[in-house]
Length: 202
Image 1 (cartoon, helix red, strand yellow):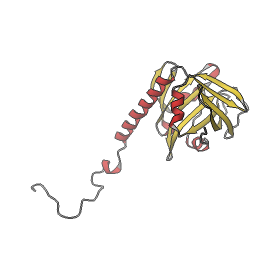
Image 2: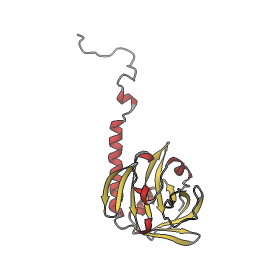
Image 3: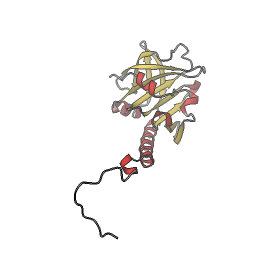
Image 4: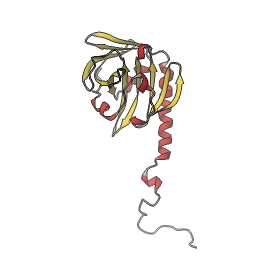
């Protein structure tokens, strides 16, 4: 299975998946569920995501994005030990959830000058990507036919359920705060031409 390139996503989303950034000031907490945190990312079109911090500052982040007319799902994993990772460079990887067939992806390197942010970012619009993630117990990444990361997804089903609830509620709130122009301005639409029944005039 093939995932889309993350190049466009990287341009749209100024985030990485470092331990510091996984729960940065640009996010709003929805809740903590076991080892997982669910938040709203205000830099990604107010899209919800889940994140988990593992040993040695390894961080997994999975969520939705909606920005500049683009939307979809993304998976990001950060490992400070990946010192040779280059920012903006594409890496051909395989991403496997549980025992499912691996996804082939062109991951984008995300590097910052903090000796911590060394991330691989992949994106896709296939809901099966989400389905496999939420029903699996592990996430493995392979590069050059070698396993470079193997992370536990224990508790992820509940976390994904909360991420979806977070997104539904966030969308409802934003719709109320930012109604469509015709809803916000009742006189924006032209009245129908011709005779209309009117109540008694004062």
